[in-house]
Length: 370
Image (cartoon, rainbow, N blue to C red; front, side, top):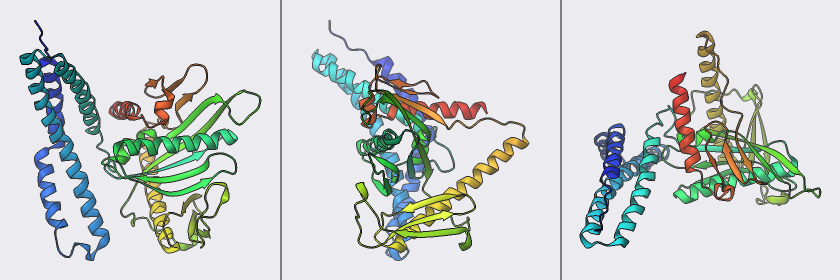
């Protein structure tokens, strides 16, 4: 007699989901949404556009958080009904549908569970990602562009808006660097585990000797700060350059010198911005990003000093964190977590969720051990 029994699996998912609900605190979430909705409905909301943007962004993020939780709850209930229906009708098609939904729900709940580990000071904020090519010539600049596409495809698959702030194209293939913003719930906390040095090994498409080429690219992830005004930057600490925005091959995309490059002389930090329409807007956006970088640098130095005073000096987890092999055995391997994929094409097409989840869990264990 046909019988589909998924009760133990569903019960395990409900137990995990119950823990998630407690961490998320649905009642507080609903109260926050009610308060923000009232603020968003105020007739004078847009008298202060900056504050209005904060309110509407916070409301959107919290509504998305609540929707994810309520949808999982609904799907768990629907799954139990589907299992009952399959058994009553002795229907193998319904059973197959139930098994597929169980697999999908397991993945969704695992991702939600990972999100509950994101409790850092800036984890809820949007992410600013900067990719810079390293050693490896044309292969490195091409690799940097491959990484940029990988993150853009990941964002596209999740429906997250992306804003490209600056792109510096290489004379040959690919890009020297690029900076872009990803808007998503917990974007910084999620993507910060992608920071570090990425390594590509492959037969170079740019050489004639068919030799293996190793190239590198650096990924930096910082949170978007609505305000970083607590960091004051004296004018004599800045060098400001304006230039004409350009596209691939140096082709000009603007007819005015509206792009801005800020150099912070004491630290050597350089911020370029060319996405906005005017020089004033680009300078303001670049200044905010520079202030954010300096604020984070200040906090990192304070944290390092505390560890030094406590006698607990540990190496940073940054440098080389993932290798991509595109010759012989096709493989992508994270050197911190040990997570790997035998399908590099899928990874470069944005299939990053498992790598990110493994990275977040690894970081949480590391923090707990420190």
